Amino acid sequence: MLDRRVWRADGGRTLIGGSPPRVLHLSPAAYGRLAGPDGIAPDARLTVTDATSAALARLLTDAGVAHPEPGHPDAPSPAAVSVVVPVRDRPGELDRLLGALGATAPGIAEVVVVDDGSTDPDATARVAAAHGARVVRHPASRGPAAARNTGAAAATGELVAYLDSDVVPEPGWLAPLLGHLADPAVVLAAPRIVAWEALGDASPASSLALNARKATSSIARRTVARYEERRSSLDLGPRAAPVTARSRVAYVPSAALLVRREALGAGFAEDMPVAEDVDLVWRLAAAGWRLRYEPSSCVAHEHRDAVGAWLERKAFYGTGAALLALRHPRRVPPVALAPWTAAAMTLLGVQRRWSTAAAGAVTLLATARLARGLARPGRGGTRRAVTLAAVLAPWGLGGAAWQAAGALTRHWWPAAVAGAVVSRRVRRALLVAGVVEGVADWARFRSPGDGVGDVVGHVVAHRLDDLAYGAGLWWGAWRHRTAAPLRPDLSGKGPDR
Image (cartoon, rainbow, N blue to C red; front, side):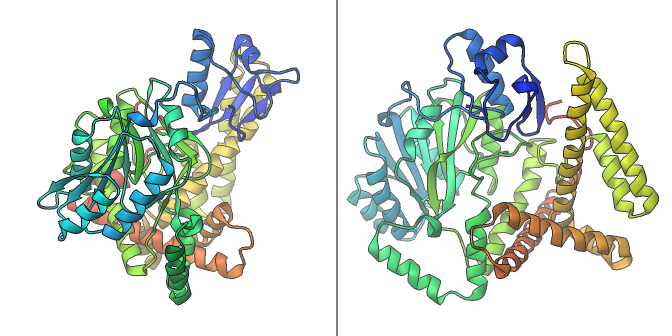
């Protein structure tokens, strides 16, 4: 089904969308497959019936302008699924997860609990036995990556569903993921990770405990919890997407994944204490496999809301950028811009009238160049090309501004703060980026009924999130003696070019 945010120009003969944004000019045959009596509708559908429609479907879904509908009659059976749960000293959370699994995933082949060196292994064994799960134990902790690999090696199913012990699957979570694996080219499907507080819990005792915790929480904890409900690092949003580096959904977390066991190879990198899930995803994509993010499948996660633990976790995530940059060059730049957008943003950053005018001139030149490219033979008339270019060039500049503001307040903030000490222009840029990007982020993730206090709390939490992640990033870069995660990519090319 066509993504509803795709812009359909010329009656749908030209599609603009995806991540990163691209322009697709449909041939008459391709247009005929998608169009109805009034052209291509916002909810246009394509049914694969032959090699031609299959090739078109692959093109559209790889570009992110259309998405497979999750249900499919040829989907694998739940009986092909082994659930692997890595755990260490969390018998209560494990009991909650296994109870939810029994209610939401009937018919699965087995549940393998990997006890990664718990101090009380008998407690883990008792909980697993109560739910009919099999236990494999590490005498000493080897980390979550090793625990997942051990579980996969012990599993018997063709498919492995990884679930962390602090998640709670929502009813119906498994079927949409299985539907994606009806496509033999897809080896991984991931659900949306939502806040457990937002989803709620069917257990009266759990609900009472949750309400009591909320009632006694400090303002800081409530602010963090509210922020995590809106835009946790684990929640990748309500829109389906292919999973690929430097796109809207560049990774999926290992808190909940469904993977073909045969495609895992060596599995998770056991020498990576963080970002091992991103590494696995990118290795699978580099091998030519397709990976899908499916938000109609939901798994709830009990987010951290204690401020110190939350900031520590954000900094821990930041340390993974250096490891990823070394293993996957050009996939984790703080900004990725085409040369003309980089030039325009640099001129705007000078904050002079002449530089602003020069940035406008650069944008106009880029628009004209883009229009010439769109008007090449076989791509339509000049008027249509100018119209498309007039939309796409400012769109690109707006995206560049968003990236620059994010990098200034997140990836580069230590350098930006040092520059602000000696430069009024840097201070002004940092202040504007911090406030405007924060408010824009709230507007993007806001909830109905949010008031002024919610805006302020969100902006403060967002800036603390960035400060912690950026600190971890710089620490990881220093520790691994690399500037790779700090360098922008101004080539205008994809990571594989």
